[in-house]
Image 1 (cartoon, one colour):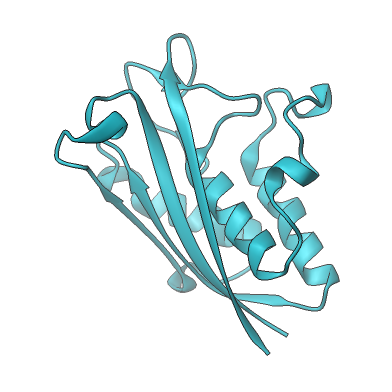
Image 2 (tube, rainbow, N blue to C red):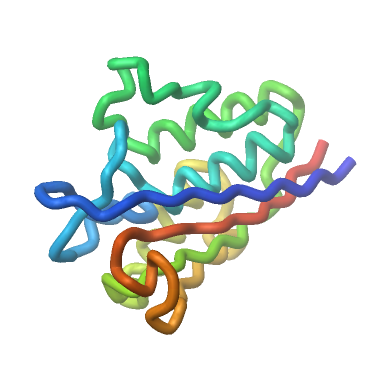
Length: 157
């Protein structure tokens, strides 16, 4: 049995925060605002996996009003999500994700992101695709107000 999931996340830029994307501390003049490390890419991936397995979303499992998740490492959260998915008898076949950001430039960090994601999920990096694009200076990402990410995944039982 194959199941497809879709995930979406968005985080605003903020002063005095790191810009963690795909588990990589990407150099940027601003970081991302959030209760955890605000890793927009890993949050979209987590939501796609949870959605594919009909397990809700990351807010259900890691609520932002729970102090134990303050500053949480989203790679650890992704590992926990994968354990939930596996507990329902599924394995992850592949991940295809896109980060939408006017800044910072992500191309130099894509391979490291793919490797981080693959390790957290327990699959080969060849089954993890991460792409980055801008919105040609349109919308909130184009105005450099934040970053968004989409992800689709395929899981199998």
